[in-house]
Image (cartoon, rainbow, N blue to C red; front, side, top):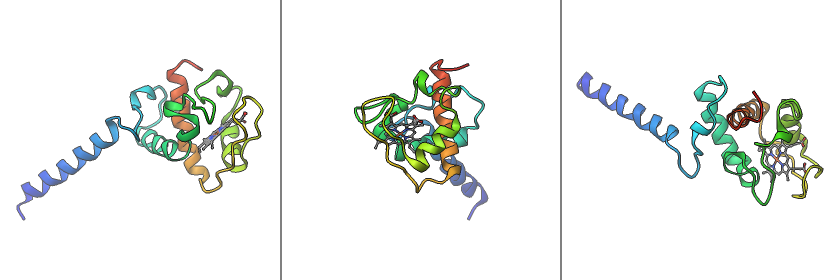
Length: 134
Ligand code: HEC
C-alpha cells in the first residue's frame, strides 16, 4: 500500500482515539473538571475509566455523590484527613458506615493496587480542582 495512505490511516485512528478519550460523554466525565494536579493525562484517563466502572455508581459523576454513597470531592476526604491509604483500605477491606448514612461500602478485592493508585490520582485532581486542598 502507498505509504502516505498508511500514514493517513494511522493519523486518523490516533485522532479518533484522542477525541474519544478527551470528549466528555456518559462514561467520560469531563477531564477539565479534573486537571489540577501534575498527573499525566494518560493516568487521568485510566483513573477516570476505572472510577466510572467501579466507583461512580455510588460516589457519583465527578465524585459528587449519589443516594448510594457520599461525595469524595468533600473536605472530609481531603488528603490530610483521608490519606491515600484510606482509599486503598476502602477498596481492599470495605468501609463500615461511620461518616454518613448510606450503609457500608463492600470491599472491591478485584481492583489491584496499581489501579486504585490511578483512581486516587483522578479523585485527588477532582478535589484539587474544587479547592478541597491546595
Ligand atoms: C456500593 C456503593 C459503593 C461503591 C461501588 C464504592 N463505594 Fe466507596 N463508599 C461507599 C459508602 C456508602 C461510603 C461511606 C461509608 C461511611 O463513612 O459512612 C464509602 C466510603 C468510601 C471512602 C472513605 C473511606 C473512609 O475511610 O472513610 C473511600 C476512600 C471510598 N469510599 C472509595 C471508593 C472507591 C475508590 C471506590 C471504587 C473503586 C468506591 N469507593 C466504590 C459506597 C461505595
